[in-house]
Image (tube, rainbow, N blue to C red; front, side, top):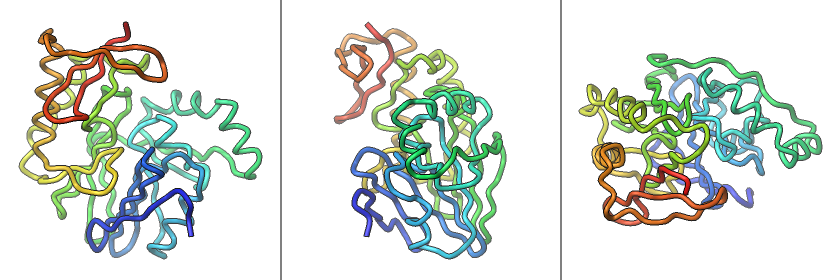
Length: 251
């Protein structure tokens, strides 16, 4: 039915949306409402995809402002986004190719509603709490599903984290944000990241990721490697198995 987006069932009320291995979103259904977490690249109608899974009212939240997480927002009227990422999101949505696609579809940029640390999305029998994790972007968030013991981490906790971007915060700020999750570490066993393709990550990714960020901050770099990305060349700090790395400095 959809050419790019593949639906993968995580459990009886969580679906992963794999957008051609380029981006990932989620549909989480409660008894009364459903939550769409990230809308991916926007090439296909995310609302229509969600409606193949549930007929419950839809709430939409972006984990952060990067194009591969927000461009599908055009299929919705309102989307939750942390205020610290709002202006960046609007800047990305000024990209000519995005503007052309929007004009051709008859869609429009949605209204961004603020979401803050400590907010809770109550879906009916299932709640997800918001944790503000500034680092990859200023307004990055994670969402904790205590019932399923899953942390939806966006790009804040992920095997390959980009911290070399202009909008990325200092590494010390990122480490402090990650450490703010320590009080709830005992409440998740698994992680679903902003680019998970089909399976849950073990919760231990949190500790490994946090330690790698600490090593970058402390200058432990003897095994660091050159990393090529669309913006040029950067340095990367590998940790554990491929593709785990913290990309941290343009060179």
